[in-house]
Length: 185
Length: 316
Image (cartoon, rainbow over all chains, first blue to last red; front, side, top):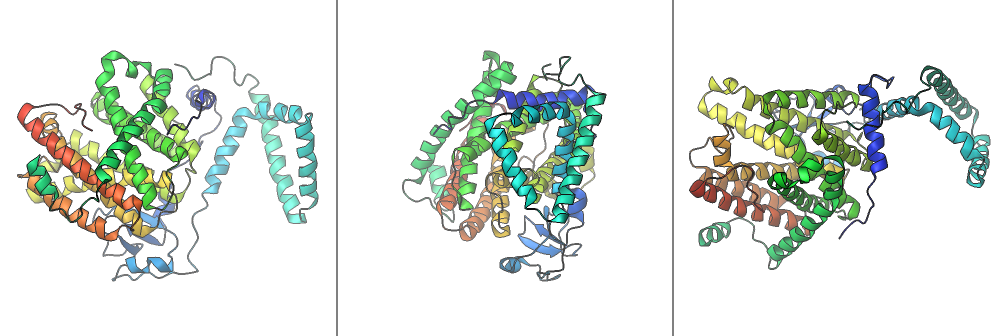
């Protein structure tokens, strides 16, 4: 029944080190990851009352006071049986899809890149020298050549931004990872 | 024993032959796996919790995590998914996380409670968590491991995290600022307490299930929420006397005839769950677990009425 997975103290250390960097005022990022999506959920077109099992349009007056609500951005045909009889929510193709959560993820990646930028670039150079790295470089080159103009422009822009960020952060903080920021109290 | 058996026999759902024994066997196996999973973590990041003088608290954490693993198994199966090793690991970590969070809320005084809630709010809005001691270090490591296992930006999962946090904030506000209940009529006060109990455990079980089985259909979400609410009423009935002694107001310790009230609640929830849950293994496991929990907490309530006891008493 055991998962037989070995402990992962390195990942634990990394998670703690990240928080320690921030506590020491050296993270360089205001937001690492925003789980709070209250603004998006408040604007969602549908609200599901988890206690009553009833699906409402946003703002329906039949929603009971204090109902435990979960926002929904789309309504499937199989959920019509749960629809409120008063506001009668219907599937609507014009309703917005789920909010762009990935922007939060990108923000998290950017903040991590900014934390470990110098290390990342050096690792990339070292990796390129290995057999595996050279094979991957050839594959990435083939993928790049197969992209259309717009995709190439977008990728170039993203890489340019990352590169500029890496250089900036390296200049600002060459002492990253030193000075006892290993996360132990 | 005769009384509780006769009482259970009138519930609108009856366990098939062999189910109680199967749940007992699962509980034993999960208890061993919980210990195997959490012990290295505790020894590494919060060794004081595994020390001899914290034996009761440590045992209670293992028992809560075992319960969460059983519930996680049932809810995963209700959703038609397999409760594999990864999901077991997540459920075990979730149980540990809940136990530690509850301890921050309940065990270190009002100032620590408020500070934790504030820092957790910051964690949810920024990702940053100020770690001030070993216990919080273990909590954050466990949380980070859970987040590493699942897309934490899933809209339902994010909402469940926020709703649970908001429910905990309300629960704490009721406990630390009871004056807000004083001016209310008795029925209204009970309604507020009942909703607080329902939401706290309802959102917790939605969070657990969202971690284990993403893409939960709405028709299941409401039933699983109901199962969570029932767990809280049962739990509060078991802790009725300990909560009263600790000055903690709950719906179940404010009603005049708690056993009768719980029976009425349990009958309603069992009927709804039995009728609504899909006919699969998860349905049997979830209902079987709820029945077992109901009966053991009736026993706990009676035992604590006779002999006294504390919230630290470990019941299966």
